[in-house]
Length: 225
Image (cartoon, rainbow, N blue to C red; front, side, top):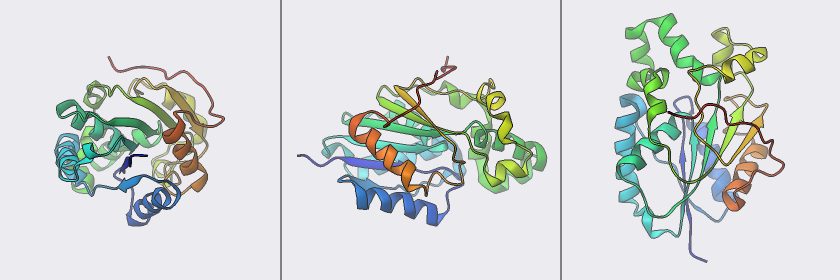
């Protein structure tokens, strides 16, 4: 069987230990050639997408039979932008990890800190994630699935977000999911989705079969216009 690749695109809150855990899990428990690009996300979605396109070309990702992706929040927008400019012919399955709560954090941070202080924290990416423009990025035509996080991270809780507000945040105009073959809801928060082996094993099942085992089927909701 020809070798397949897996590229993991982490979000802006992932520290070194979380990145190492998710990378090592898939290296140790799957047959994929696993890549975790070190993207500088400070320069926003477009700047990160250019880095990703360079990375995929440098590592000759098209030499693999298929290339799958796991995308944590900002990683998904980066991938959509990168492949809209330079698609790859061997695109495999894509898993997006999304959180109505965590994705409200950038806007809250900018409101509380002000634009100048917020810019020093995560640069242009923070503003890109708070903007609706990201939802207009071209949708990737791939066999994809979404992990929808229902838990509240420590950062979101500090900003006053509560778990009982899930439905309100899930259906905010500012939270827009791309069309997906399947959506699986997890009670985990964004603090835990890098290090929960149970969740990572479920992602591995989707990458292999195109289905989340025992996945909860729910309406994907609003689609990008």
